[in-house]
Image (cartoon, rainbow, N blue to C red; front, side, top):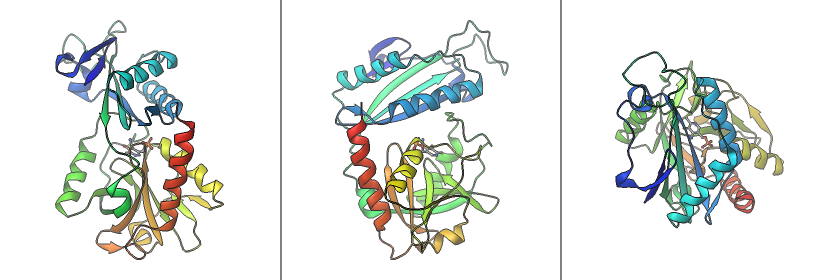
Length: 284
Ligand code: PMP
């Protein structure tokens, strides 16, 4: 694979960053994952807008040149013959001279890294089967709206979920679901109303979440943006998750309780179809 590091396209085994990079020492960096279908980018502008916001919230001074970033994404797609998969983009505050909790002076340049991952996204066993999820307390820091590379707790609970035979973890704060380990969480009630937690610092403002709520509106489905409990979710007609790399995955079991008939629900399936159709057509 060819990857991108600070202005250069290099083979992945020749790419390097400093051991003093603050992403490495302090998780002082942010990232985006943009999916690729037919060699084109899904919702690129949404991801770049969120990158700018994450950087601003942390005071990382990386001047986002959208055209340049688009060109880097496209060049990596070309160099790696990427047809379907993802592009990972990370910007850290950069490498200081020493390990120091204080931010380095303004002349330290942010580190920017991009790489591609080939993956079948549209044809997906997880989408056909549906996911089993297990709940865990949400013990992440309370700025989950910033997409930082500080993903240890999310990784930990995903592994704990796997130990319990589940595919993913749903996180619970003060008795209500915030989101999945790396996705937004939804339930569908008996009136076919889609319920998902409102935007706040407690969840990542998913780019796919925004698109899915638009798809729901097009299907004339009502949406309620509010928190729900695991007990309410277990009684729901359907449940599902969304993210840039999964699009929509139905959830068929929560903490051992089957959701509906225990098979992917029609609303989740339909939303997945129209999301793929609309975003494939709009890809750049
Ligand atoms: N929540 C969390 C915690 C995530 O890590 C992600 C995926 N990065 C999402 C939600 C979904 O966001 P998006 O739809 O922008 O991929």
